[in-house]
Amino acid sequence: ALGPALLAALLVGMVIALLLAALVVPARAHPLVAGMALHFACLGATALLFARHPALGSVTTFDQLASPWRHAPWIGAALLPFGLAALLGRTRFGLHLRAAGDHPAALRAAGGHPARVRVLALALAGALGGLAGATLTTVLSGTFVDGMSGGRGFLALALVLFARWRPLGALAAGLFVALLMTVELRLGADAARHGQGFAVFALRALPWVATITALALRRPDRSAAPGALNEPLD
Image 1 (cartoon, rainbow, N blue to C red):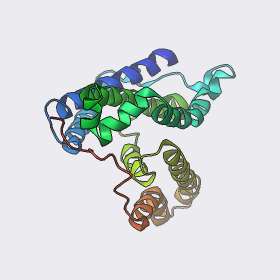
Image 2: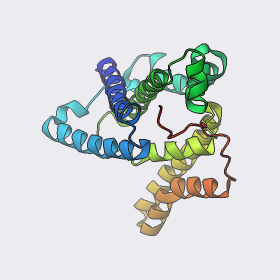
Image 3: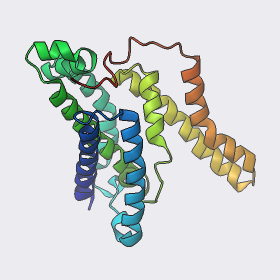
Image 4: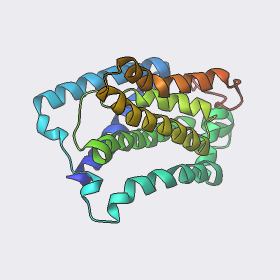
């Protein structure tokens, strides 16, 4: 069923994010190292789970729902960046979240709890990441395939840097990459039918090459990243 699948994706993403929080916030592990370790652990765990229980990989898709619910993923994806921008820029929690990333000492002096805010932010990010992954089955295919994300999570990290940590900037960058992926799927299918192997390879690499090139040409802006990024809390 669609509802339980989305709920499971949300909860699993949140649990994994809380595991990362446990490694990074109190244990002071490096976020990149801890994140990569969890990434490979999750790859192995999902492969083992669906090898033993293949029936779990099939879910109802949004296209099978009655209108207007079938359009919910697209509406949600369009509105979410604006909601996050409002959350970060116009709410007390957003102020605390930005302070926890930029000036945790100032937040602590004002009576806030930087560690608690960071853990909560990671849990929210994990929930959204789980829902993002769930769209691959509930929107696109209806069936889970091992490795179906195809490294899109790493593209998302690059988009965050390119967007200078701004939700609306990430929306614009994401639409650009989505356009490239659409070109790759459309033209790649034609190239595969005509046996043009090199063209298929080049088109598959197009989103990655374009993203890396854009990052390389963009001048670094250290002020855009959180000031206390990767710095452990005292």
